[in-house]
Image (cartoon, rainbow over all chains, first blue to last red):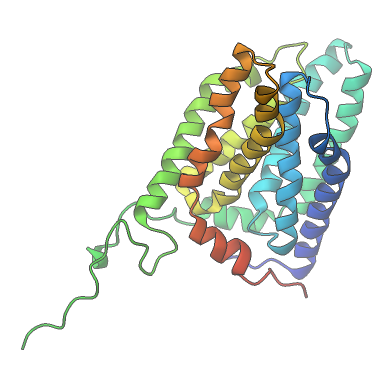
Length: 139
Length: 147
C-alpha cells in the first residue's frame, strides 16, 4: 500500500466536488424533469453522466477507493479527443457544438495532475491480483 | 492424543477471514470478462474506426469502462465502484427514461430492445455486487484522512 499525501487527498476531493457540483447543476435537472419524447441516446447519455456525478459524492469520503471513476473520466476524454475531435480538427470540419465540447473535455487534462500515479501503479499494476484459488493452508 | 479439531472447514462459498468469498471473486471476474467481450465486439470497432461525423461520447465512456473491466479481471474488488456505476446508471435510465416511455405507450422496437439490454441489468448487477463488502468499505469504513 503506497501512502498518499494529505494534500493529494484534498486535490482529489476538490476534483470529486467539481464533478458532483457541475453534473448536479447541469445534468440532474434534466434527468429529474424532461419531456417524454427524447432522442434515445440522450437518455442514455444523461443517465451515464448523472451517475458519474452521483458517485463522485462518495469520492469526497473515500477519494482513493473511487479512483476508477477518475480513471474512466480521464480515459473517455482522451479517447474522445484523439479519436473524434482530432480528425475533425485536422479536416477543418469542426462545428460549433464540437468546439464547445472540445473546450469542456480539455479540462479532463487536469486529471493528469489529480490522479495519484504512484499509488495507481502500486495498486492497479504491481500488486499481485486478488486470489484465484483457496490458499494451500485453507484446503 | 487426537489432533485439535481443524478450524471450520474453508469453503469457496464462505468469505471466512477474507473480504469476499472466492465464488464472489469469480462472479465479478465473469461479469468483467463478459463486459470486455461485449463492449469489445459492439463498441471498440467504433473507437478504432470512428464515424467521421459521429459525436461518439457514449462510445468513449464505454471505452473507458472496457479498460476498467480489463483491470477488474485481475483485481475484482478494486472495480466495485464500476459495478456500482453500472447498477446506478441503468437504474436511473429504467426509472426516468425506460419505464415512463413504456408506460406512456410510446413503445417502439428500439425501446423494447433497450428495456432488455439496459433495463434488465440492474437486477443482474444486484446479484453480482458484493453488498456486504460495499457496506463495510463504502459506508461503514472511516473516511480517508482529512488532515
